[in-house]
Image: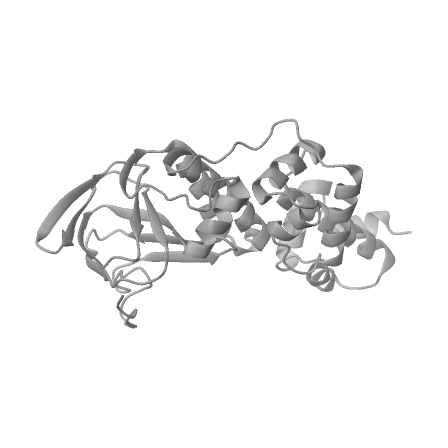
Length: 299
């Protein structure tokens, strides 16, 4: 296998940096997300050499994209409808000429990340995703759109949220396109009061930092992460990420009442991205910004 060559003129996916007009990225425990777009319709040739990087899944956000794939002496033409996607293996050299509308959301899943996804989804660790171009998938499109929205606003893009979305994406892909079926999360399963208390203690100890979903699942015993997310939601009525934001907001309320710290200092200590992030979440949950709420409730 060839060593991956470094080229300062292209990105990690082989796209010319001069031709990609939008390039957001985010990484989680299971996958790396990219948003790539060019309004010039002139991406041209893309090349990546074989490397041990796992799989690349790319979804076309618009119709009208075409590409020619070169493999040895053979040439394959691919056409993309809106919300259709492809799966390719980084272990093979890839050369393609890209034409037409180019707006893609992509996820790179390492071999280790896919194995962890399989374990989290209750699938065989030998599961493989079907390579090639697949048709429209509105479920995957919706999941990637939600992830892209969070990446666009980095304040909402916590590790817990990325992991939560990654598990939903991975479970969907494995169930629908995997070589071994992933088990469905068991409906009606709930967490015990002891398990909820353990998760609460873990989260409260790490409110000012990232809390991976795997760590929360581990606090509940030997439970796959995807099963934990479903059970947590059925028990609390919230996703782990929503619950984390609620816990951070509660801590911020207490500090606003009991300390003289500034709103900016409190936002940092409570794990919010910045003061404006705290203000937005606080206002949404309590109806007023933290400064005004403090003046109203402090004796």
